[in-house]
Amino acid sequence: MVIAIGYVALVIVLWIGTWAAWRAAQRGAPAPAPDRVGMGAGDAGRDGTDGDGTRRGRAATRLTAPRSVVDRFGLDADGLGPRPEQAEELALLDGGPDLAALVAVVALNESEAVGPGATPGTVISRRPAVCADQDLRCAIHQEIDAHGGRRIAELGRWLAGTPALAATRQRLCEEGLLPTVRQKRVLRWCRAAALALFVGGIILLVADVGSPDGSAVFVLSLGEVGALVLGVRLQTPQTTAAGWAVAVEARRRLPGLAGGGLPGQHALAVALFGPEALGGADRKLATELGLLAPAVRPRPRGTARSRRSLDTTSSGGCGGGGSCGGGGSCGGGCGGGGCGGGGCGGGG
Image: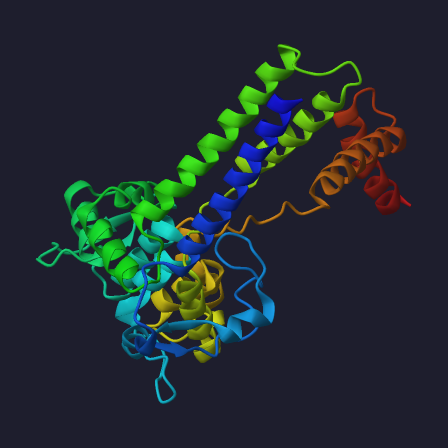
């Protein structure tokens, strides 16, 4: 029984430590209190949840972000919202490297630097990548220019390991918009520890540490459930509370981009409202980039019926001709019937 109680105590301690680590990841890198300002982030995000699926509701209106971030993204009282060149950063806050790569492709297509390839879902370079600075958009252009015909789905995986993405992530982490690498590592350790405790609990159950009345087995089973739930359900937040608030406030400031916006705004629209926004503004481009299924022209429903009717009519006419003419064959009967009818009329 003592072993079972000690096991449950370990699970409880791990739960408390994990909760503290998760809260720290939600806060991100600490910023001085005077540098933080309130954000009117609205009531919900694109789907009413944050990046890790947790529903926040009206609590979002009480979130804060560093003043420098609010000013940089144009989210202060007099701001006009994010600029198109900040689209990749906003995509990282809400969708990770995959969405950031797609946003970069859309932006490069708008500037005619790249274009859709021969196969849907691929892109090719239309002019050499001459940019020297290692931002995300430039890195994507250089990769497409170097290899050509790259699939957009592969660009996200490639971008995840580039120095350009690491530098952008580092800047967003320093601003408190993304969890730091250390915070994510601690949460991964917590999850691994929970799964290890679960396996250890199974070993204890098999080794029979219980008492005759089974109370130790019951207590140990409770600890097993707690460790399993923690190990399976724990998810590392992809963005901090401030980063989520920035994304939601940007959508609130620019609601017209939900339908794709005007030319030159498509990349920012995709960053804020997802790939479906491009489908509303330029369905042809969205299809060429593999974001929408191509329209398939349905086969006319009456085609087979018309063919059967044509065959039946031809067969019946042939038979009728044979009957009228009295010919021995189908061809002869039809011909004979026609001539005979005309001859009788003329002779009478």
